[in-house]
Length: 226
Ligand SMILES: C=C(O[C@@H]1C=C(C(=O)O)C=C[C@H]1O)C(=O)O
Image: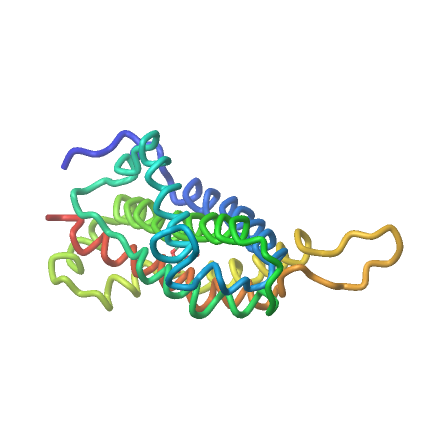
């Protein structure tokens, strides 16, 4: 199969390094979103002056503009287009958001929706990066992955691509990053107050980000030999 040039320069180490750097991006955007309370009018199905909710409107129009200058397809190695953005969207708004923003309404609706978009894009990019992870894992051991792909055996693929010790490190590192990046900085003693609860960040990774990244990996591998 024709390989994207990118695939030849990727290694498991370089892919993991990118995932580690992306943790910073995800956490900084969560911290930015936490600056505002929930601001529920942003999610109301009809917002004055726009069709649909404000967040739908901002996401749709910003992405339309961004897609004019980026070619996301560059990130795909096969014709299979794996896209779990619907799942990420539901997870973010229904489960994650209430865990790290305060109640209330401060009127900063456009800023709030913009922060949501940035969080969603950072999470989506991180999770869909599973395609790269899967490709390097396959290239490193086609003799292991090949039979499981031919048998379309999801469980076997999941087992092959899972590294529990790496997952444990990710969880601990993102918690530590949330503490370092999100601490209140003051000149006297710091009171250990965080802008985003570090345990919410490790839970985000444990319950959603890593399982979804692995789901993307499995879906990618299932059609790797098509
Ligand atoms: C991303 C990888 O694959 C799996 C998913 C992980 C993640 O999403 O962080 C971590 C370890 C693996 O179980 C990897 O091996 O680095």
